[in-house]
Length: 145
Image 1: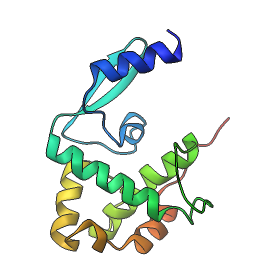
Image 2: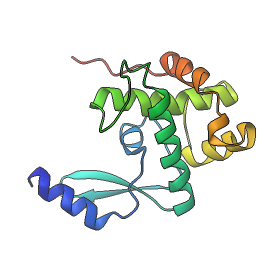
Image 3: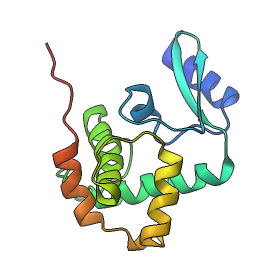
């Protein structure tokens, strides 16, 4: 299947694509609301809760904005290269988790966001400088052979 046909099949079959799909597919994070779907020979992740999806999209966008300096980019307009996206997603989620409970393993993204909201309040009040710093400590990319 060519890339354009895959993207069209993905758009028509998955209405609620998970914003942390790459993290979930690489087992960097897990989520109780995520469901894996197979399209052609690929896997996609959808979210089964509309409210959680909105929270996750907002967090992903906030992480993108706050990772600008760490990724060496003045601003992020479009898609990031895979390695930078993984650093932002995995590192950001792990950094947030670590800032809350001292553990860098993300077992449930939906629960993590609820806990963060209880502890920090609004998304704008999250300690992003601490999260980005912890992301560098908590996330290590896979080594290539």
